[in-house]
Figure 1 (cartoon, protein in one colour):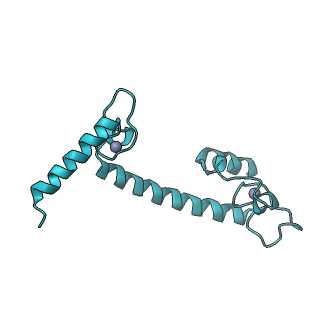
Figure 2 (cartoon, helix red, strand yellow):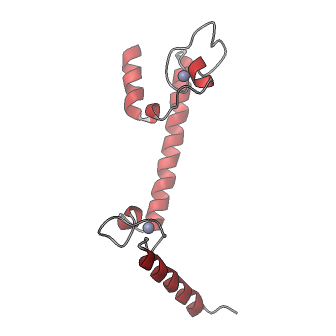
Length: 122
Ligand SMILES: [Zn+2]
Ligand SMILES: [Zn+2]
């Protein structure tokens, strides 16, 4: 049977090991220079981090959905925002470049660029 104190000891041992390796004592990630914890754990406990992360993810998902819908309605690629070619891209949600993997959407996931796109089309 595992006593509560045993698991506490184990946690402590794990934390000591992390510290020896120069890793965050809380989560084992690389630490921030000059700190004993990683950036996430410095900015708050992991619970806060996780709820923040979840909230942020929901917001991102919502945003991505809205963006996709808007782009589709305006005849633009759902991935990169370029105008779709009526012949080549007919009935498709993404442009040929994206379908062939020439573009990634990393640059366009930022709200700024979407807003720029939106203001341009008006
Ligand atoms: Zn950490
Ligand atoms: Zn595209």
